[in-house]
Structure formats: C-alpha cells, structure tokens
Length: 421
Image 1 (cartoon, rainbow, N blue to C red):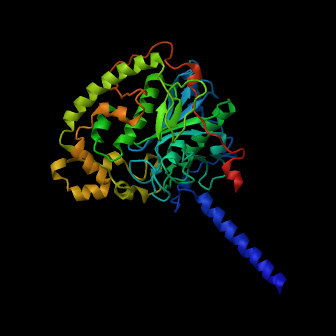
Image 2: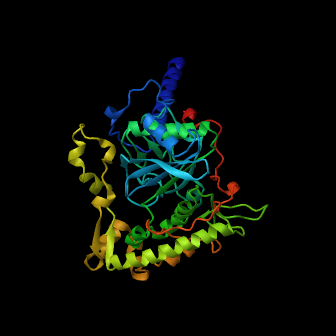
Image 3: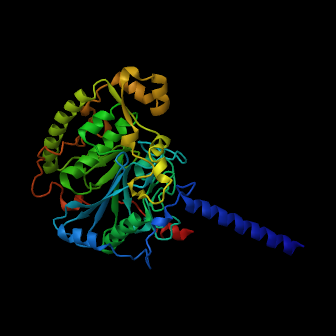
C-alpha cells in the first residue's frame, strides 16, 4: 500500500515539475499566435549560415564575417537593426528588420506581468542564446539588468524570439530570427564577449523628443538618450555603468573606484575629445528641438494601446497569404495621434498615460532640453540628437579610447539558462 502511495506521489511530483518548467519556458508569452508557416526549412537552424545577400553586404562594408555586432530596437517605428564593426572598429548598420510583434505601450518594463517590452541597455552573452526555444530560436534580453534591479523592476524570460507572438517580448518572424541568431552566433565565434542590445521607445531625434515631451516616461527617456547620442557620435557601443540608480555612459573613474548601482557615483569624467564632439552635437540638437517645439506647441501625443495598434491590422492577420514581417501588432506611429492639449480630458489622459503626464504638462510644458543634466550625475555629458542634415563634428581618431569602447558586461552563469531546464 505504501509502495503504491509512493509511486503515485512521485508521478504527481513529476507532472508538477513538467508543468512548472513548461510555464517557465513559455517566458513572455501567454498565448502563441504562431507564424509557423513562415518557418524556414533548414536542416540545422542553430548553425544555418547567413544568406548570400547579407554576406555580400558585410563584404561591401569592409567587415569581417565574425566581427562584433550590436542590436538596436525602436518600438514606435517597429524596427530592429543589426550593426557590425568595420576594420576601423566603428559600427555600421548591416540590416534592418520590421519587428513582427511587441506588446504593451511605449515605456520601460516595471514589473512582472505588465506586458511591457524592456527599454534600456542590455549586455547579451552566449549564455543568453536559446537554440531550443519553443518559439523557433530566442535570445534572452538579460532583463532585469543592473539598472532595473537597482530600481526594483521585475520580470523574467523577456526575449527576442521567433513565432511572431509577444506578451512582453520582441517577436520576429522565424525567417528573421534565423538571421539575427546567426549574426550573434558568428560574433561570439569571433571572440565577442557581449553583444550590446539598445532598446529605445523611438528614434531619439529632436522632433521625436519634442513630440513625446508630455509623457510620464520622459525623464527616463532623456537618460537613455545620452547613451543613444554617444553611439551616434562615436559609432561604437557606449561603455555602460550604473550608479545612483542611473545609467552613465563612457565615464572614466579613478583607479580603485567602482560603480555601485545603488550607491553614489565615484568621481567621473568624460574623455576630452568626446566632450568636444558632444558639445557640437548638443548645439545642433538644441536648435532642432526649439524648432520642433514651435511645431508641437499646444499639442500632445496620444500613445496608442496594444489593442488600438492591433486593430489597424486585424483584417490582414486573417489572411496567411500576407507577409507578417510588417508588424502584425500594428504601428504605434499610425495608431497614435496628435491632439490639442485644450481638447484633452485630464482624467482620460491620466488613465491612459499616467497622472505624471498631466503634472508634467503643468510644470514643464516645453520639456526643456537642458533638463537632461538632471537625469545623470553632474559630471556626465549631456547630449542630444541632431537632424540628419546637420554635419556632426566627429574628431579623428575616434573620441573613445579603445579600452573604453567595450560593452560593460555582468557576471553570467557558466551554464546557458535554457540548459538549466
């Protein structure tokens, strides 16, 4: 009798474990709206080489096939970019993909279950690659990073993956994911220790910053923008550290000091040549921002919900004959709208965008670009994004010394996370 009970208990325990790990592997998805019909027919998806068109592009740009890469994401535009290092150690964009699906709205992920896709700077190591994902292939974003943990943000299994379905992730078609995975795999084979993922709400131009100046996330975005600008100037992934619960970029600290995510920042400084380049960059941004403010005077941007984005493409999703790579969750730019502030009901705006948006309208209606200095330690560089037509003074050689151009990494477990299951 006791033997029968013991066997029953073991079966129940085994079943519970299977269900637990299945839920864990599900990660950011609660339902799978699969684009499996898009799955490429390859013999080995993990070792599938890049297609000839991308190899040709890499060669045309003077890059080594296994040179380092960087991934950059823009939610509002629905784009994922892959950048790759040239022989001069500066990065150039190789390819741009339409994100197939991302959930939530513009703004960072704050807590488990909020369906938000992360925003910020994340170091990806070989540990973050998941060749056995139920969503074709996956790369863990590394959320939460040091900044997220210092600010009490929570969430697990936030991925870039295939299957075109998302509940907090950045989901691509399987064909796209096959290429993105190959880019990362080849870079790691070439010796890159960490691929930097930069996830932004939108391209952080002066016009976009002015358009979103009433958002409750504006101060957070200004902090991200400093790192965005450093890359625009140097074309190298910035060195990222966290102190005082804030990101700091390309900052030198005295020997023997360290960055404590929750503690005070050590004495830090920006490399002189980089400061010169950023000053010119910032002047161009301030002029462009002032011009954009006139364009959006008295206006406020409404950030659409995920349901409102999906409504734009509901009919197209019914037909599998359509190419889903155009982003079936819909464009935030197309679903959003510019509204007259006087016509906005403060109560409805507070419910949609948070009460901070209403408060910011009253206290900082123009979103002063110089307020960026308040989002980082006083010694850190404050920058902006210049319009594409403005010449950017980039000193030669590159303003970042080679030893500071490496991506900051965090300690990673020895065994890939997917093997733990």
